[in-house]
Image (cartoon, rainbow, N blue to C red; front, side, top):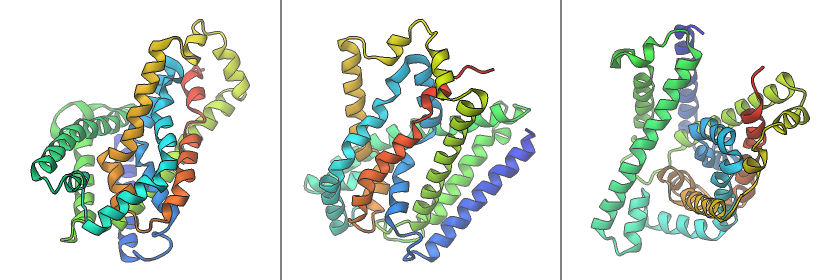
Length: 303
């Protein structure tokens, strides 16, 4: 595709996000933006660029080892009705604005601990954001017919402009109120909208590969069956693999509670505790549907 066409598509998409956020901010109490479905879809911010690239990459190289990243949140979801509800109540009562505030509060408003958690989150988040922007840059490079926008200087780097626009978006819709504990309805609405798009596009890709490039799941399975190390890719071989799975499940279990972005959407942006009743089954269902075609995309050889 032409670089200019891609840029127009990106700008149009970002304009749509701005418009959705603007409408959501104006109609904060509307049932269209303040409901359990929007809240649950906002939790799907957990599915980032890693879900598109990492899951398929790991599935292609090491088989089912991508699953622990999603099993952790699925195991954690039923506990939300008890643990997360209590965290939400404490946060609302004390006007908590970040996970650092929450941890600091639980230890007697220890300022040093709050500052330490903030620094840890900062140094943990910066590399993660860089990976997200790298995914944007590499996707642009794959789709474009000229890579000069990607690897030359700052002024020709498409990622720089995307990051700048996203920073403006977050500033405009995230810092209008002096109260840091204020709900950001516009941002949550756009995250929910993006969650729907992510799922739809991923399913479209999966259906296209499975049923258009191939004759269904059986055809792909028959081709996978010819792989020499298929058993190693689809089973846990030994104690080491078991410990690796246990470690990754435990890590993702804690991530769904403690990642700054997850804490923001699940705790700070929660408008009603009763939304958790819907989230504890709808969010795992979202993850399940998202991963239906991962194996088929990863192992479907290109014709």
